Length: 221
Image 1: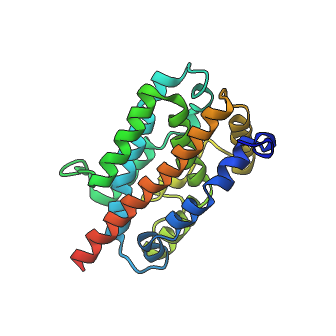
Image 2: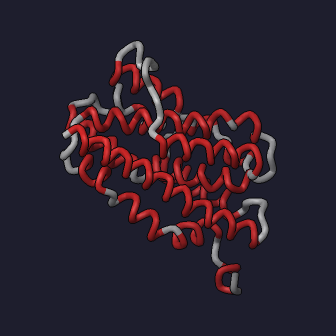
């Protein structure tokens, strides 16, 4: 990295370096159709199912990484989404929601990469952590609002609890603190560059999941 890059806060560098991938993922056909009301609640349910596999991979690693100097500061109990996803899936799929639940191939690949990073590369885990959780606290709220309006879920109730961070009373302040942790991450410039590339890869994993969801609902139309 050049001197300008070195002087740039890491959180800013991450945001700027992944802007293209972020935009491409957020404007995917599946996400665009879902947010525009072009897909039914079954598509939203299928998407929520995929999130359960992804966040399972992220959150099963927290005990392993809690004391790690790189990833440990990012292990925050108030971010945990798996219990909320399970409440949403019980609402969306019924009490036996686990029956027949399988990840899409792209989701399985995505979750496997997160698990690999958790085992072997804390910096890579942080890249996936950042990509998911800061997105949930930001653009994810648009998905919640759309789901409530489109399919009649109670405001911040069952079906959209994944997007409700009850333990975070000031999301803007939390996100500022998160970015400060990124800026202070225990990594040299080469490692930060690798983390940036893993963030880009994380967006690509998301895009692959969206592409398979799009194909799935195109075939069923």
